[in-house]
Length: 462
Image (cartoon, rainbow, N blue to C red):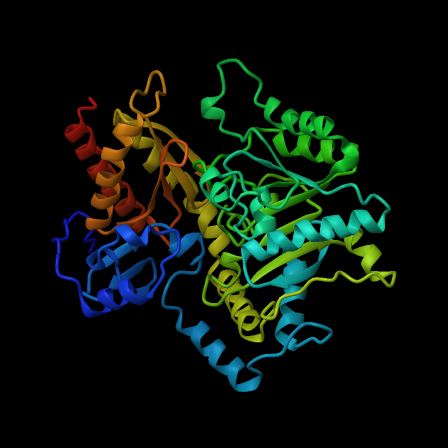
């Protein structure tokens, strides 16, 4: 049965593995100078929706690793697929060559994508997929004698990766500022945080802001618009009705390409194979990664429409771009095995079946005075926390410095891994593996409720 309500005891003594990690392993997005060895959780095993640390403690993985372990942990059949592929062909590049796993995976992806998105260019991960798309859009426009089209329009707080090209699209200041100047050309407009829109304002002004920015920059200089179906950073920002139809019209009007960044939103996360299907729009390019292999091996992809690929297929033009491990045989074979699991177990349909119940559980938290908004889709949700429900007032910096460590620490102690994000405002991110069922969703709700209730009492929010 669930262990989520049992507060796990503090263990102040660092293990040997924690000490070695602190000495030699440079953790990502982590302030290493402030990190004590005992603060580094060492995860050793996974099973379904749960992971276990070296001391045997069990945690519900409410973030699916990093929004990516879609089929759940401990899939022995994927280990078998990997072993068989390594015995057959451990590696060969897709630079002028092809191999069976990459061919079969590309064909399978084309079968699942909407419309004419039939050309698959593999990468090592999501940042590289976005980087590839930005470069392809520039190359496409140059082939069409529109070489001045170099700018890319993205949204405020959007995260599109941290390689220097992708970083130009990323709208998260904390990711950009340490490395500025970034690659030129990134432009940003308002995101779709409808919860924060002034009362009575038409939400479609958020789409019209893209047209206004295109006109401000000069249509002849704009290469592409890149948007997530549900914007993860900022707290699962969903589009208002009609938003993507309006964006598609705007892009067509000005000859701007439309990239749907589905690094997270594809592979069942929103209850559809691709997020663009969930919101019924047809992009020119889809970028994806993460759930394509359920993170059992690194892999990303840029999926391109026939129309955009055509100039490269019918002329001597070369897309002069590639990555050593793109379409790696091992990763491609695992991805095929992963998609077989999805189809055999009906995981996409399962997410659709359970979505309303997940939403209802989280919306029930609004009886707590610090819960302002609940938003998301499928198995990707955020709970925005506020210091006043009526005014939607943000926490002050001083308040955040007190409440964020408490909430994060208590959730983890009670056996729930999720993200407490205060990049712009305070939100809890919840995105469990797609195999999560009623018991796991109940456990998530109960743990979050217990911690937020305690936070209300401790910090005086009533």
